[in-house]
Length: 86
Image 1 (tube, rainbow, N blue to C red):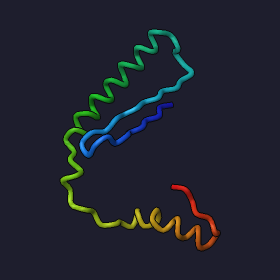
Image 2 (image 1 turned 60 degrees about the vertical axis):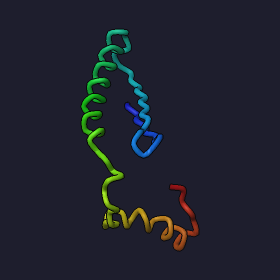
Image 3 (image 1 turned 180 degrees about the vertical axis):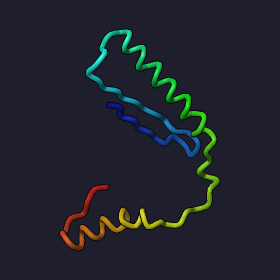
Image 4 (image 1 turned 90 degrees about the vertical axis):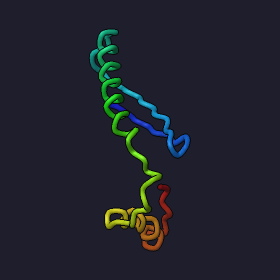
């Protein structure tokens, strides 16, 4: 299982944290293979992510997909009296 965490540092810089858990090939050789695979994946991601400039994009309108997420807290409060933690 891979857990991947991203932490914004500045508008153009993000810290990345990986946590990998596994119950197979626990030998030092297996560890090396996993590290190689992760390095390969990160190198592919880096090329794509470094091209992105989200701060240059105009504000995007709310889409139908986002409406449910936005309405969820108010709906649960009005119907169930619960304020969810998001």
